[in-house]
Length: 392
Image (cartoon, rainbow, N blue to C red; front, side, top):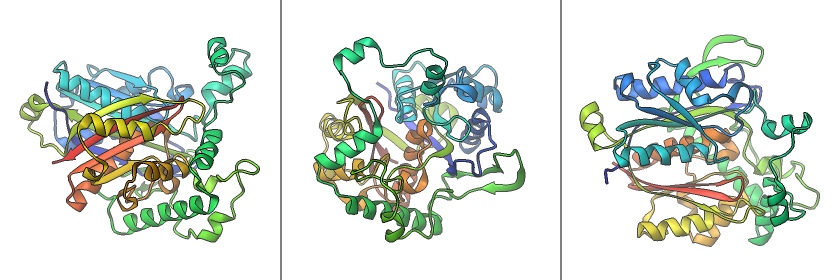
């Protein structure tokens, strides 16, 4: 079977809700990334055989196959198709897996995988809230309810369950959140995000455009202190998690260009990284966010590796208990985790986060002269994708 290589990677800087990317239609924002990947690689746009984009809230401006709409808003020719993926927060990581599988199978030679989410213009939970308001029912079928009677499927409940199960107190969560900001601040000031961030025009929610470019993740709190983080109100009474120890609502887009050996030769591109392993696992949908732990253990076993063999890890900071429980259970090195900060500081643009994290991982490995990177993230419904790459 052929190998899958990543030859270009880009992401927008994150935008706060109502912030510097709020004026962008999500299809247009994703189109900026598509064009950037083609420009970075220097390939003929017509050589792209498919575009696979992750997006969680596929309604309103993100409805009707946002991937194809992004293609039609880009400089890619009409001959390039597009399809949209929803594996909840792992949507664009799954898009990468689908793209890699296509080129490894040899059915395609060059595929763009990416994701987009405007959490300003299509607020979280909109796909559930609008139908419910219109009396059109809920995703939780009678069959699901019989299997899980009286269960509230909630990521917020899951985060609290993980914190309690693994004995992670609020103080540890607060310290972790501060460290996320510190690492993101250091990475920004040292210019470590410079090569991965695609500068796009600042467009505010009122439609105004100043002509200035958005190049710095808007969610980073450069004045963050432990005292301020610790003072944020608890999400649930008697709980441990707060908004300060959870991922930030974020607008953004990201993407990767994936090719096989034939693509490398015919397109004349050089690889940044090789896909070494990819897998996905379903787990308990009630605790929901715990899946990255067994998924990583299984992925390492299937890859014939140990956690010590991995040089850097990106574990999405949906809530601080998730990476902390992951570290604790796997015996992983905290110094290798989310070295440039995570979603607590940088934001979590849902469907775009998978390829966003991979873009950061590829660049971080290159900057540190390291070889193997592992990415995983918790996903709604109790799932987790795991991707291991080799930096070339």
